[in-house]
Amino acid sequence: MEIMVCIKQVPDDSVKIELDEGTGKPAAGRAEPIVNAFDTYALEMAARFLETGIAGEITTITIGDESSKGSIKNCLAVGASHGYVINDELFEGSDAQGTAYALRCAVRKIEQDTGRDFDIVFCGIETSDETSGQTGPMLAEMLGCSLVTNVVALEEKDGVLHVKQETEDGYNIVETAMPCVLTAARPNYDPRYPTIKSKMAARKMPIGELSAADIDASPDRIGAGASLVRTIELSAPPKRQAGIIIKEDDIEEAALKAFRMMTDANVL
Image 1 (cartoon, rainbow, N blue to C red):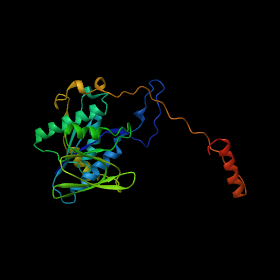
Image 2 (image 1 turned 30 degrees about the vertical axis):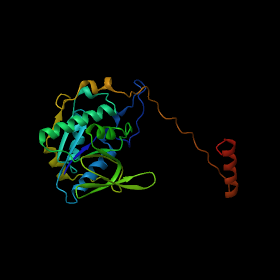
Image 3 (image 1 turned 45 degrees about the vertical axis):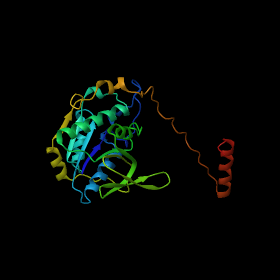
Image 4 (image 1 turned 180 degrees about the horizontal axis):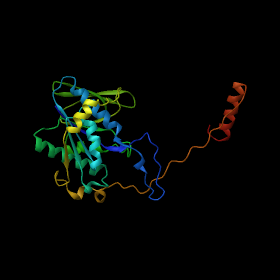
């Protein structure tokens, strides 16, 4: 079983990021770069899937600069066997469609060079910095394979994947043939932490670096010039107004006062 896990390096979303007054863009430099949370769930899900006794390996890939290798190293320390970075200035400004196209080209190139055809390609359902949720579905379309979104568990039976899909009303159990693309939601467990031993081993593992030319990506389909979606303006959310504290000795009087205040404010 060959599994590809696509990841993205994003600013740590536990750190409050303000807009830069000069550029109007998020001042993300103060936040430590980390692997997108849903991508870590995808990697953990893939690792646990293979640990059920299925022979196979996990390859992880990202689009980014030299600093992205640190995120790939972290993935190698918690279950991945191979890692790649697609590093080329031509990809800067790509929208979800350009990103999916680059990943599709990379998947085919790695399959061609290694002779390993990927049975499952994992993505997170969305990224914390953009939250479009479109890259996985677009990648499935470009690869010409099936897609299951919001995956929280999977198992293999007689060559068929049985996938547990989270919905607003509960869960679906979906059967799909391979190859397929799965987008991971949050399962009922957390990703594992690397050990000192696995970190040391990951440092010694090579990371493949691919350019647009290496993966035969057409310049007309990547970068800001090819993007169909553009960000016109960013603005910070309005600040919350201070709340009102109701101080009444009697509970009923406090509830009545709150009701009157909400009525006056046309909240009710």
